[in-house]
Length: 426
Image (tube, rainbow, N blue to C red):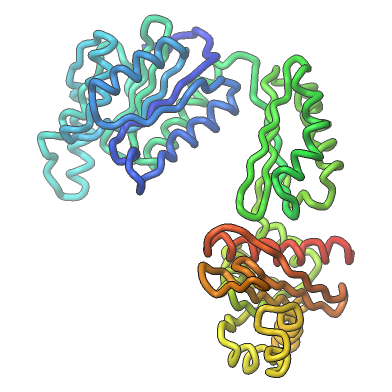
């Protein structure tokens, strides 16, 4: 069957699976498909998660058909009794299901390669709606399906991401891209730290509000996340250099207004950005961590090649180890308390001297939920940086959220201190 040449301007995604209505499984397929559709300029109207119930799935599917040119369904193509996507779609569209002998042979061959007999229930995966195009699945037993029906395009994809993603990539390139027209969604991002969401909005709104009345408008979304604020710009326009240039100028204007607080424009996390600065500068780093429990070193070493610039670190939770491993004077702790700027500075100096690193970091604080006082409430964290070339600095931050959030934000602040010191010291 030759796919229709009708243009595709709008789409909906339906993720099928009762497990995704619980609390321990995420619908990552919809995120993946949404990104691919956006790159093609196909407007995503809605995303829905529905359980393994044929009646509810049929209702959701009918609603999607009424709104979108393209409907993408993921999941529910397996061999078990609750895998009903294929049957529900076929019944809703009034299409007869027939067993495809070639698919049966393919599935049987996969089992045979593992010296296993194909269970008879797998024959359900070989049932194909009349007129549908079969999408090969070399990574699993469930083939995908492409159905052109009454001016709509319906795509059925397997649920496992390792099977779904390459299948959808191939479909986008071969079938969907030629029918997506000349429009594309151009995107740009800025990741900001050191400012809260409202402070970013105060600076950004006078700028991006001008773009909403332009044709076509540039849409700006501001999202708050622990330790950072994200600005996402999108422009649905012709796939031309002029559209790219327009978005580039808008992005540059926001970047100039937010200045040094922008730490990434391509989605790289803070630890990757800082690692790049350390490598480019021929610098090394070490840390003495108390309340963060090694999280800062973990984030830095999550980046491949970090051995180029990470010297090492210690977790000094107890006061005794602050003295023994980082050389913090015992009388300094008694005079100021373990959570204090003098102790943070001593931690940074001590770890730098002991490791020979270019940069030393010291972090000490109260992550909670207990341990706070009126003078030093939960979320109080002292962070210090020690260098021979860029000078030393120390600051106390007041962080909000639960224990995990406080720990992450503390490491984000510490990494940002390193980033700014390197930038300013160049």
